[in-house]
Each structure stands twice: as structure tokens, then as C-alpha cells.
Length: 566
Figure 1 (cartoon, helix red, strand yellow):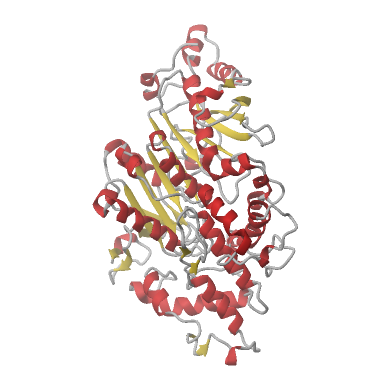
Figure 2 (cartoon, one colour):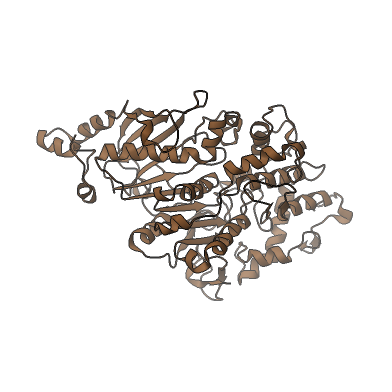
């Protein structure tokens, strides 16, 4: 096979290997030649020695030329869609299943997409990156070779909440991060072989939630492999986050503590009435979240002249919050302290921004609202057996405790105290070495890597406050000016966990990352756009700890009329 050179790629020659050149010589239709080259990948072996961690090698199982489809910025170009398997070192462990999209017009770069929850399925590699822009081409349409994996296990009908894989140690380690290296190395081998190159120009990672943790883990553990990363709402201190989720789940399981939609709407409205104007304008968003957290108290708050807390803390005929419900909200808002040592060094988790966040207001008519509710408080109270309709974190914790911690599928997960786990403390500490990502990006920065961190202030599944801690620790370890040379952190008012009906964020993070890595143009004047709450509304992306404040005049839906205030 002839070599598909960098020069040819730079000129966007439409070829896999020497496909187009050969087609021109024989007058064979280009698409037929591309299809043959793509199909020729089936059965290609991935040698174990090309993968940096222990495996039994792998192979390509499927490869099909996919015709261009879609219109405008949603268009997907012609590409070779590859499916493959990376075999485990332990014969009892499941394969890592991965997908790789090889565009006909390759830009000499690669992008890995992360997963979500406990993974178990491959990400949509022909789609957008987390919070990706709706007015720019998809990564594949930009010419990226895009890939991702199921992280080393195949989920059952619980999907991303299925934790049963963790009964196998290699599968657990793959989910913890090993699958990132194995998948990356296998994909690089196939990309280089297919395009006939010895090196890929740039390799990036983008992910949110678990995918955000994976982005940080990848650039921390294998800094030489990556040129840049985008990490949205990263569960970087995953065991600490899970322990806090258990604290919340147990609080909501208390008698009378669970909030249904009327109570969720009331606490949202009351917090918004108290905090919306703290940024200079009442626009349905809490931008000065720090001040809101410091001043709003549901026990003394009023809404439309009526107390939020029921008289004497007991239920009444009017919509109000009982003492048990307020206590559950306060548990969500306050930090947890772990009264046992975690090997990762984590000692606490800082709580969620509850005030002004959508906890799953089912009466809202936005098409995305069922997903918001699913990821927030669900529709039923946590109790055994844990149902899919409970808060997302409750079922996730039930699976984690049963399969990762106790390895007893019959264990009553709600009995485990996350701050004082007793006999399970040692196992939880051990798991922290797999799932918690250390704050150590000096090697990545020294190699010229760049990192974009972003998080929605209304996230009640992975806390913005935890990402703040990661960034502040990074500044403490390296000094702020050194961090500023390679990393940025932004917070987005009104944006929840991956989705929102208040401010559904989209941001062209990939272009910002490309410009920083490839042109040495640090991010300036970044803009985030809302696609659901007020479609087309924009806000400035403010370097943390700054937040967007209205200047007092002009269209409140235009970022130009906001400044970043400290």
C-alpha cells in the first residue's frame, strides 16, 4: 500500500492510504476504492506489544465505509467506521470494545471521547464533544480521526449505572483508567497503519463527568500521549464524589425527606428570588453563586410573602418544605468529612450548589427535562430495592456498593455510612487509588499540553465546588502564573450536569484548544451560548473565580453587556 503522507493530508486529499491515487490511475470510482480499503481493515491484528499496558492484543472486527449524511453543521462526512476488540490479560475479564471513525479527508489529528457513569457502551464518535457548539462542524467533519471505548465492559440493561463489571479486577482497573491507555494505543496503531504515517500531528481528549475524569486521568498518567484536553464537569475525585452521593441518597431516604416537583419548584423559585439579582440583572440565572450560597437560608427564606419552611416544620395544605425536606437539602449543600483515611488522600467532598439548581422539576415542558430529572432527584424516593426511577446517584451507589465495595449483590446499600463505613473502610480506600485522580499536571504542562476545564454551577450530580478545589490545588502546587500558562477553568451559570432547561451551554472548546496548542493563542473572550432556556442567549466564559455581571445597560441576552467580576 502506498503511503498517505502528511503533505497529502494537509492538502485534504480524499484517500485512505493510496486509495485516491490508485483510483485516478485506474479510473475506478473513488468511493469503491475507499470502500475496499476500509473493508480491508477487518481482521487486522493489533499486536500486544503496541499497547503500553498488559493485554492479549486485539483485532478489528468490523469496518464499513459510511456515506456522508446530514446537512449544515450537523453533517457527517464520508468515513470508515471501525469496530474492534482489545483482549484482556486475564482470560476471565471482558474485552475492551472500541470504535474508530477514519474520515476520508483526514486533518492528521486524533480525538478521543470519554464516557459517562460507569460506561459500558462506546461514545458516539460521529457526534459532538460535550457541550459542543451547534454552529461549528462536528469533530469528524473537521477531519479528526475520532475514537472511544466502553472502558472494558459491556453494560446490562442498567446502562451507565451498571456496576456488576467490578467483580472482575481487570475490568475494574480498566474502568479506573487503564482502558484509556489501551484504547489510545490501539487506535493510534490503526490510524498510523491506515493513513500510512509514522506519527499523528496532535492528539486530544474530550469528555464530561466520568469522561471529564478520564480526560484528567489520561493527561496525568500518560502526559506524553496527549497534546490537549477538554474536561467538562469532571468526577476527578470519584470515590469522594460517590461517598458524598451516598450521603445524599441516605438523606433523601429518610421519612418525609424526599421532595416532589412542587417542593422542587418552590425551593428553586425562592432561591432565584433571593439570588437572581446578585449579578446585576434578573435573568433567571444565579451567576454570583458564592454569595448566594453564603446568604440564602431555606429555613428563613420567603417566597411571595410566605415562608418556605412549613409552620413548625410540619406538612401543611399549602406548598412548603417540611423540616425533613430542608434537612435533606442542607445535607446536599454542606460538605462531608470522611472519618477514615483514603489512600488517595481525599478527606472530604464539598457539597452541591443546591440553591437555584433544577432538582428535576417535572412540570417543565422543555424536551430535555426528563433527562434532567433522571440525572437529578428522579421521581421516587430511594429505598430497597433501589429502582431506576430514584435519583441517578442512588442507583449508581447501590451498584457501586454491591459490586465494587462489598462484592455482595444482596447487600443493603443504604446501610453503609459513607463517613464512617466501618469494616468497608479499607476496601473503599483501596478503590480510591483506582478512581481518584491525583493533582499532578507538571509533566503534561512541560510537554506543552493545554487543558480547558468547565463546569455548570447548577450541577447536582458532580459538584462545581469539587472542580474549584482541583483548580485551586493545581495553582497551589504549581503557582497561579504557571497554571495560567497551560490551563483555564470556567463556570457556567444555570448549566446542570450535561444538560439544562435554564441555560443549556454550548461552547466551541475544540477550536479554543486547537488555537492554544497549535497557534499559541491563549483563550480570550470565550463565549458560551444557550440553546434551550433562551435560545441564542450568550454569556462570557469567565476565568475562575470571576463570574458574569451585567453592566446595567443593553440586551441582557448578549454577552457583550456583561463583564467578568471577581
